Length: 173
Image (cartoon, rainbow, N blue to C red; front, side):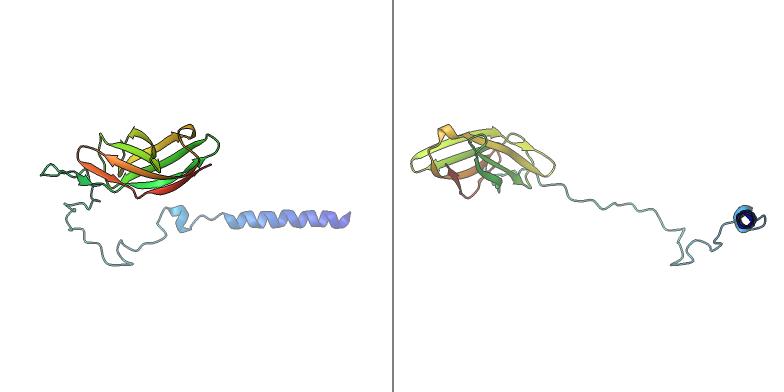
């Protein structure tokens, strides 16, 4: 019991000593002075306060818009397929794609599937966004397709641009 009282007294003394060490009345922090008194520009090149404000600002170029042919011909559009294949859950062929670096209204995307002399075609309006023109998803129901290998081509057409992908093969079970 005597040792526990002694330990308690020692703990109280240690706490009071720590609290006394934490308070001070004459340090720089309490006087409001900054910790560093070096003037601006000391650690690097001195600041030039007479430099004029910039008059030109660098900007990224705007995405190209639809080409404007002068001879009535349409510009060539590069069409890209982003995904394609048979969807067994919904029994359809799905193809998605876009026209990169071309932003224009009024275009149409057309998916054409061919197998021998048979073909199936679906069309939808393209949607422009900030950097390209999206075809979205084009779907051909499986009941319009015989089993086997089909060639799929995604094409884009507008008043000023036209283009198509190379054919890709889609397996219909």
